[in-house]
Image 1: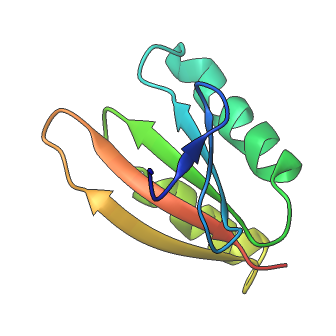
Image 2: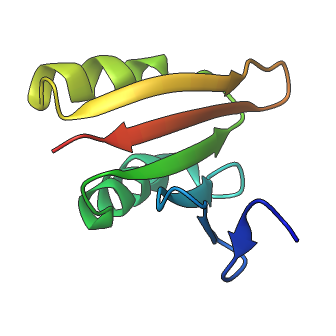
Length: 93
């Protein structure tokens, strides 16, 4: 039996009830990426995690989230480039 259960192509439920949603924006036009990421973060339930996959370091997004919504999100790099960055963004409140 798998440790995690794949519910659909984008949502993964882990045994400890953590909710992980994957969002790959590498094929999203650059001018639409920000709004796509923000919409997904807004829809994320408290305690949920968005795994963001991007073709560049999303550090500017982290700085903006920390400024706009301090203490609302935890941020953890999963992979650091050079072709893709994966970051788990956990919604705390």
